[in-house]
Amino acid sequence: MKKWFMTGSMALMALGIAACGSDNEEGSADGDNGSEDDAAVEETGELVVYSSRNETFVNELLAKFEEDTGIEVQAFHGDDNAINRLKTEAEAGNISADIFISNDVGALEHLKMEGLLQESDPENIESIDENYRADDNSWFALSARTRVLMYNKDLISEDEMPQNIWDLTDEQYADEFAITRGGNGGMIGHVSALRQEWGDEKTSEWLEAISENAGTILEGHGDIRRAVGSGEFKFGLVNNYYYHQQLQEPTDNNVGVIYPDQGDDEMGAVVNAAGIGYIADNPNQHSAEVFLDWILENENQREFSYNSLEVPINPEVEAVEGAASIDDYKTHDMPLSQLGEVWEDTRTLIEQSGLDLEIR
Image (tube, one colour):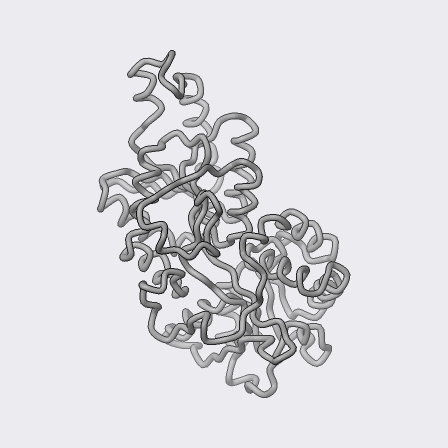
């Protein structure tokens, strides 16, 4: 079965041409003026997926969907560019995507607030707690991740490690740790939680300090885990599943993890989630609805979380061996849906504070 996983500018050109072609031949949505031929043009029988999630976490999932359903998938893996692409298409009236896969609930809620997601009612949606889905089910989370400090045990002990996020500003850790660029979804969600806890002034101070204090600023968390595992840096700020990934490496796997801010008077570790958004005015509604029903089957919820070693939101889906449940430690109390309300403002605050959104 043919699988088409696209990246980069070729994907944008191909999907843009496809969108323009369907727009030129578009029939009436309600069937009053459109013919059966028009309807056939609108529904290609394919599924177009935009994803800001790591490609290696998504490809096997989409291949399984193709195998299970016979629906061919076209996927654009665009990191943060996937959101920008969707917004650009919406402005031009040429939406070509059906489903959005995101690492960040804040990004999904932001898309909902922009009118780019639509209501859904898939089977088994009740398996996802209401705290982890939109009020109209236009998006829902499937797996949780927590912001942690992963460290190299050969270079630093647990007692020597910072125990809270503010400690990253301490000069004793200068040049010893790695962080991601400011535009990374995990970083945006984390900073949004800090804004709620600390306010913008203290959060800006923290951003300015870690921008100067960090030994390096890398593209993504995979780069951080490898750099820490190999001993380039003593520790790094990552999502918890990257720690579990590094443990599975054949070498460079002598790493430990700190769940920060666990004291009685501390805010707890910041939690975010990855999930699915149902794109408004999508061209392949039937295929998209099949996908939403399919992804909420327990075995496919498991597939979504296991490839990344994240923790399933659905308590009936067993977590991967060795992964801590979010019930095992203190977590920050910011409702994930609120991340979308401050998503753009947080990006602006990050950039104004001196932490570039992109690696330059």
